[in-house]
Amino acid sequence: MDKVFLRAGRERSVERRHPWIFSGAVERVEGTPPLGGTVAVCDAKGRTLGYGSWSLASQIRVRMLAFGTDRVPDGVYVRELVAASLARRGASPLVEPHRGVRLVHGESDGLPGVVVDAYDGWCVVQLASAGAEYWKDEIVAALLTAGAKGVYNRSDVDARRREGLDETETTGVLAGGEPPERIEIHEEDIRFLVDVRHGHKTGFYLDQRAARAQVGAFAAGREVLNCFSYTGGFGLACAAGAAKCVENLDLSQAALDLARQNFDLLFGGGVAPCPVSFVCADVFKQLRLYRDQGRSFDMIVLDPPKFAETKAQLMRAARGYKDINLLAMKLLRPGGVLATFSCSGAMTPEFFETICREAAWDAKRDFQIIAHTQQAVDHPVSLNFPEGAYLKGLILRGAVAPEQAI
Image 1 (cartoon, rainbow, N blue to C red):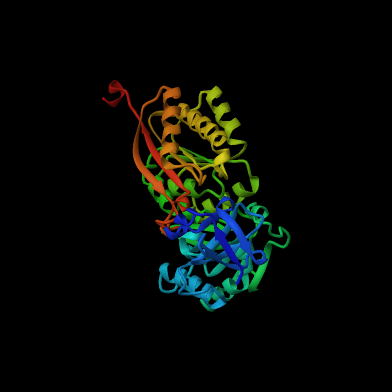
Image 2: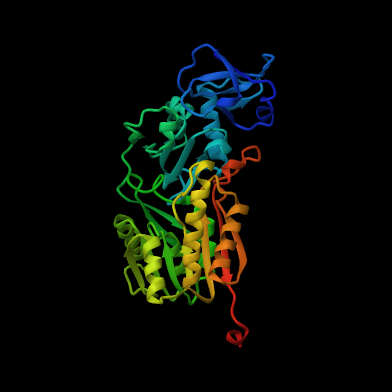
């Protein structure tokens, strides 16, 4: 087997079971490992520390699959990892009707770069690392064995370029049947239609499941502005939570069209319990327009796309987060609620809270933190891989002047 030798002192992260080995930690390579192929990882003295997947193109040269020497990863081992990940989600996560669930969450489930989401039994995979692509057939086979109706590929992600992977033929059916144009999933009493072919990520934001419920619980009687609404997730939760009205704001008309269908499902084709509107516009520009028009809301949701892919982009992203939160804070009525989120992995919860605090200073408004949110439980975070905690959120409540509280 090809071997990767680490520089003296750089073995500590592997011994602590962190799955990433960066290029600067590598002293030399014995052999010519293929892209995604398995290599033995050795310390400077030649002691084998474990085994991982190799990528010469990536700054992350090795992503660990196994620590220690008890087991050399092979196809059987990878299938066992997938089966174990599914088992952690329940006895039969692929056969429960209308369930939306993340089955494999990358490094935190021991499968670096592998994401598998299931929608009513249809599996959608993202293979974002060289090792994930190398073991694709074994991953697909494990999903079919577990009862998947079909496996659809949504590996159209920028991370593949950094891994030196082919960026063609990254979408389409990998095995089984062709998924429906729209797949229906349920979250409690709310029904969603998911477009796995063209939707964001694998088609839906399963990671915000718990946050949607938390936000919906604060919506009763409030006029809600749902920014970066995508297919309506938070807006639907607010409408189900007895909001006074809901406005969904997004740059994508296709997403808003699907959001409209989701609201029709919620209302069952009958009379809507609250007015709902859909605005196709750039959120930053539209919030400035509302500010200039003197508009205000009782509740605003900010669930923007990822502003920072890497730490190098973090400060520029921070300016974007501060700008959007400052605008929202100025549009909130006294006692209003702001639910704000960041899915940028490089953004720590502490830094995100600091950004929101500085936005409140500039807005000259006082807020209380009434809830912290994080990714749903089927998106676990390994203690050895804190980078897996990418999603963080705050639910803030604005202060009310004493005379207004009487």
